[in-house]
Length: 175
Length: 196
Image (cartoon, rainbow over all chains, first blue to last red; front, side, top):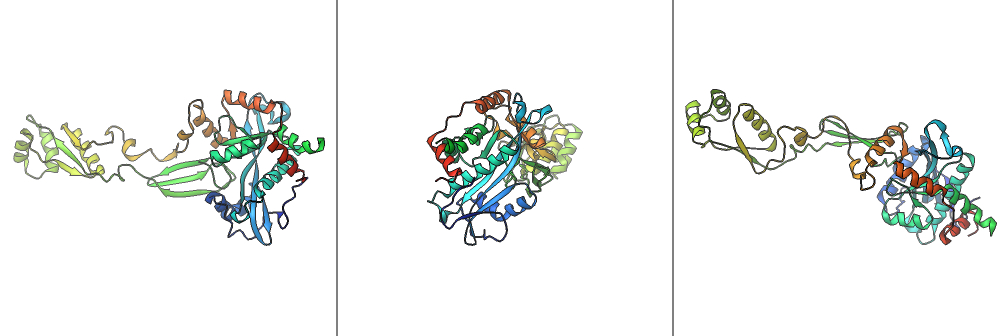
């Protein structure tokens, strides 16, 4: 299962061979992370990073990592370690699209592919869902429109429950 | 504050005049060093110690005063007795040391303009002692989320997200709620399937 990107764009695993130097999403933190931190994060296996490229140029990306949550009372099948109620979730840590490529829905395509990746992880090792750190309330509102819910106790963190993630992937088959 | 590299919580440590910001994740090496803004050193106000009249100054008081004023003991005694000692002016740090010395000698005085540091509480002037700081923790506290500080500390120590009892109940309800897809979610689902 994979997203079909507009013509000329393709998704590739992170590597240095793609030009990131001119990437500008409009958010300095996002740009700086892609240019200076992504390589280290991949090398240290902290995160999985995929680039959306056109020619040799990186024009979008997302980064995923697995995180743990402690929640008492969770169903046993979701617990990673039974004794201390730890469950896992996929964190969509970073996502960005170059300003020159806006207007084509690439951000939504990247989010859809990130959710596909998270779904694959969930099917191999069930977790609670996908968590995002929204950089602002405006972005949080966008995620809420896509079905993410506010994560209790953690402002600007939102979660897409695994059940919703599965339902989204299965929706087409039902139709 | 979260790590720009791996999104874990950042820890702040003070070491003298340095502030070290370091990622709390054991598997991440992100860190940065900057200056620690010591309040009293960064205070550019000029303060003045104004002496009260000391009609019955003891020897210890006169000795303490004479270390600051070089009039000689006789003149100092006379000026102190009628409250005409000139004010001592200095930076916030100079005033801090001088005020402690004078107070230890039992000399009464006041500081103008309003001195914002508590002479009995050095952290008000010099900041917290060396070691781990709680910078970035307090801002997470909000009504209904009073345990955020403790939770963030736990997250920093363990690398996992935790929740208040109420938060856990809300999360469980959220995870177990029946799924009803919105039109936006259905569209995202079609994109995931490569059908749009």
